[in-house]
Amino acid sequence: MYLICQTDDVQEREARGFDTPLGEILITQRDGSFFAYKNICPHLQVSLEYMEDQFLDMDKEYIICSTHGALFNVEDGECIWGPCQGESLTKVDIEIHSDGGIYLQGSRES
Ligand code: FES
Image 1: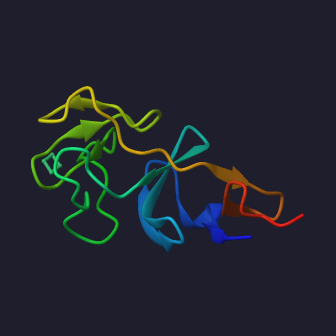
Image 2: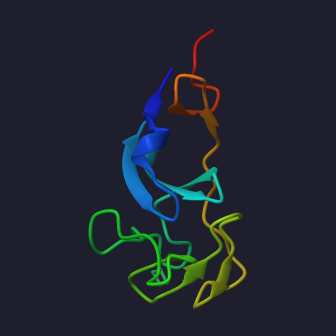
């Protein structure tokens, strides 16, 4: 099983980066749901943030790439503005368990 973090570690309209067996990912919370993506911009395959855990735009509405400012929907990762418009971040499947942990999906031993 791979525990990424606790739900308390990612507050509503905040985002954080984590190192996982799948590489660097980001997790953000919106309207009580958690969304996770690989920390790779589909434009130039670089990391999204310029400072630690700075993954959201100023209004905390979209995920933003710091290199050329591409904006991505939180809910589906689609780029809605910028040089990679129409492309998407790579979704990472996560599971929330009753212990409050956020796990990589399928990584929990039964
Ligand atoms: S590298 Fe992300 S928008 Fe260009």
